[in-house]
Length: 445
Image 1 (tube, helix red, strand yellow):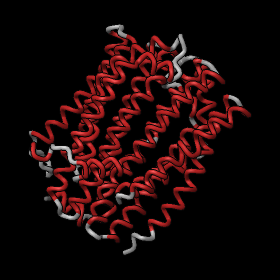
Image 2 (cartoon, one colour):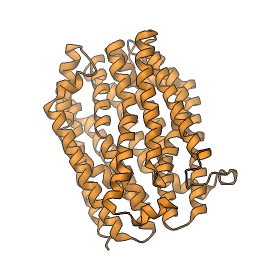
Image 3 (cartoon, rainbow, N blue to C red):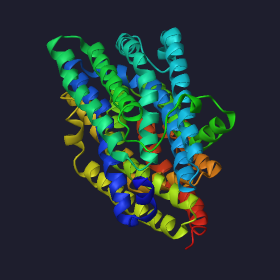
Image 4 (cartoon, rainbow, N blue to C red):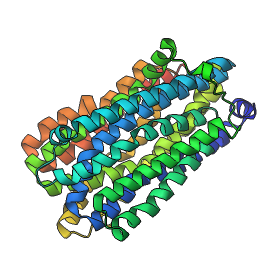
């Protein structure tokens, strides 16, 4: 139980670094999926190709949200069980995680295949964008079960303190995607369909690596056996309730993107949809280091909270908030100073470059506050505080961003859409600070 000793006794700052660094690298590599796809599609297919992937993205985000829900909820239960030395409970939690991930991802795959045309139109596809979105979606759907299993398994590995194996799985997957994307798009001339095929092959590779780790490598301290795979209502309820905040956040993000795509067509044009496709990918990529810090925080906080080590729990929260805030501030400065250089990675179209650069400067105005928001929500997840975590996940997108997107464009038109983002960041920061300060006082040495 070397990892048990590590979580219990390693110096907190060093432990957070050890668990966060692989998570940061892994998350950046994982985020490169959409970045790489967007770069090659933007240069090999054009603005309509980018717009097509932007229409499909909410469906991909919904699949990821289900996987992350199961992963974070199960990981919280596993780390707290290990901290309390309840090992059989940890093994059962893992079995239920795998069952739930395969069930939900397969259900989404079948539903997507049956309803794809209707979904794409609802999600904002115009007649010119629809063929590109349809071609991309038909392939992407096939990767959903592999995404579901792979992401849930990654969270399970992190929960036992083995962030390195999760990082390796995502590196393998992302490198494969980077190699296959230009091959399929430019060499085999498969266009947007080629980008989708490359992504699915890479996702299969990630799932295969996690199968090897848990079933064949004998390096995991978690036990996988048939007797632990039987679905149990109590475990599934705990996993889903704790992870629900992530689902709400990401599913709300998916719904908001749908609303955004329709609003962008109304107040702007097909180019405006492509603009948000670029901004969404760029912002998601830039926040991945912060998500990595949050993922490094969770097993340490959950373990020590479960073990009654409140001094260590309090210290790791302090360090995580500081590190995440520094990263968020760096992202803000880069975006403000170099918007054209960032957008130029995705397109050479002068109209798209100009519009996206101007929008980026507005959207990121309060992004330096996001580090605290993400770590605050992760703290409640790690402690098993499902209600507070759910409130924080709802705050930015559902409570603030969606109403702002409905109101501000009436007064400021297309610019009102972009202004909604920094305003919602500020309001979400305030509510996070309120709940965080109350819970933090409980973690007294």
